[in-house]
Amino acid sequence: MSDPTGPHSDATAHPAVSVVMPVLNEGPHLEAAVAQVLAQDYPGEFEVVLALGPSTDDTDAVAARLAARDDRVRTVANPSGRTPSALNAAISASRHDIVVRVDGHAEIPADYLSTAVRTLAETGADNVGGIMQAVGRTDFERAVACAMRSRIGVGGGTFHLGGTAGPVDTVYLGAFRRSALDRVGGYDERYTRTQDWHLNLKLRQSGGTVWFTPDMAVTYRPRSTVGALARQYLQYGRWRRVVIREHPGTANARYLAAPTMVVGTTAAAALGAVWAPALVVPAAYAAGVTVGGLVISAGESLGTRLRTPVALATMHWAWGVGFLTSRGVPSEPDPA
Image 1 (spheres, rainbow, N blue to C red):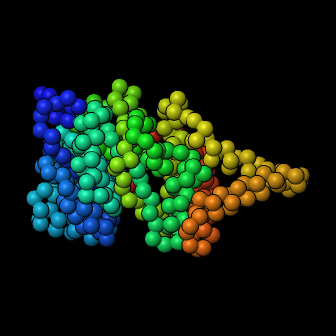
Image 2: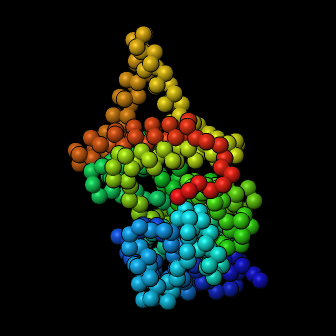
Image 3: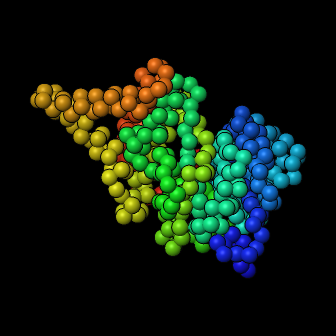
């Protein structure tokens, strides 16, 4: 059967789409997230498959209400509560040849599905995605958003910083051809974090293309406390090292910068106890983060600007420590 999204296909311009959503403890956000999907301007058929983990809030009740209200919404169980397992379960239960991932607290524009389908058709890519547009509400969340949108915060990454359309290593969330997901076996359920990056690596290694377009932007709400941000980036660092252990060729300066900083700064601070000139290293880092934070938060409120260096340092140190303390490649999925 010909691919309905092929760049030279004469088939329908509006192929059916399956939207898959991993859901765990999303009671306060789920109804709004699903409503944004159902309100899409896409003229073709689409469904929404919610993979429900073992939530401790009213998520399941909200999901049941949504499914009863609109027959485009269906649910599937995800007993482990883990994101890659949820995605695979939702994909297996879905019915259509284009699969679009949306998170349970995501905020997508009305033309998101239309843009995704059009971009798949125009590029012939296996996966297309856009910008993880960090937007905060509180001073600290806005500080984290400033850090996430800057090179000194995340080191790079088109889906964080934006850029021109074209092939990339990875994108945020993603809209896939089912044939491509089948080709690589879906998400690797060993990966608690970085499962998106790992899937996109497999797609590229199998000869496929991952395509970035700035026309697909998803609003992302940053963590609201230092502790939550530190836990998030600790996990990012740990799982990035897992990927690098399994795929050494993916290591680069961006991923090694934070652990190198942690080792160098810690060693210099310890040496400074007996040789004071060594303290210039941690002092230089502190000055750099402070000045950099003030620069990237220009135009924000004073409260946000004062918190941006804290957000930067938290991201750097948590990521670096996570990388340095990471275990090897897991043979079995971690518990939720």
